[in-house]
Length: 401
Image 1 (spheres, rainbow, N blue to C red):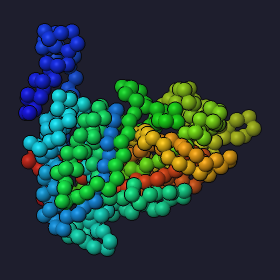
Image 2 (image 1 turned 90 degrees about the horizontal axis):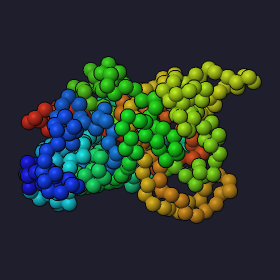
Image 3 (image 1 turned 60 degrees about the vertical axis):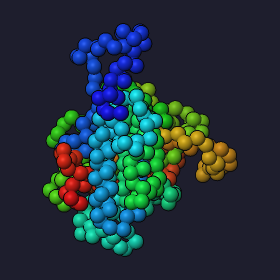
Image 4 (image 1 turned 60 degrees about the horizontal axis):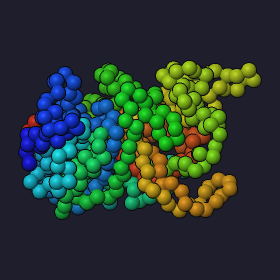
């Protein structure tokens, strides 16, 4: 099915008032485009409006030669261009998304350290091109990273306003990688579809209130986009840190809201920092109560995460996840054993340099953040997301082409 015929099919089946009404086009000014551009100076899915669903997948390369890796990225580029436009990936598409809209699908590609050197081997002659900012993440206090959910050579984050659209895209890219790369780990996620509002995470708090303004180009250049400080092939790209963070929801749900607010450092309902009135009020980290105690606790999450405290700024683009249940032994009283939700946060952050972004911020948070009694980091990775491309170019253009 061609893109044109798919759009025609959608136009004829989307109405609920009968055939005549369904075929009658709506005024152009009320139709929101259902696609996000695949080409451009930066990859989509970074400063794009956050879609409601994600399917994040990480691959291990099995290719023996650089030429095989190059051919894979060519296949992925062609398929991603078509998928983001609402068309099948290729004639062998699995077709479970036929008739579905593209739902603002974006596909964001990343290169892990293993593309450049793995097991002390420069497999593809790219070791000299590894950016200094693409560091091996340190082992943080409290980490319980599972090897099967950590690391990887290539990453693909599919984001869309429909979960099947996002999964379908990754499924097609995985099929096209057969014989060259294989899935290592994956994580689906979701956020409330509340346009114009900061989404709430599973803790019930607004997540990302302190995000920098994505519409401010100067701010994005300062915080998100790589510049002349690194290799030419990464200019206009960004570095992504992903962390799978399990949250002990049962423990959290038995905790008084007042203590939850002390832990986070914000009002649960309004999202305002403690001592403030509105969500986007600046945190007053110097404010004290009548006894001289800080209004925002010394170990509160927002204090340790704030730029004023850590000196680091990042762009958060995280998603909640729910993977059912698993067995646990609690690390806190009453130290019960039993089933727990395997739920939490797929933390995703973009930055100009992880050494001055996530690593600098999280080194202190991992040791002192009051939220640590409720959270466990179980997986993740770091990836260099190259800049966007123009028509006729391929993902990783400056590195491999």
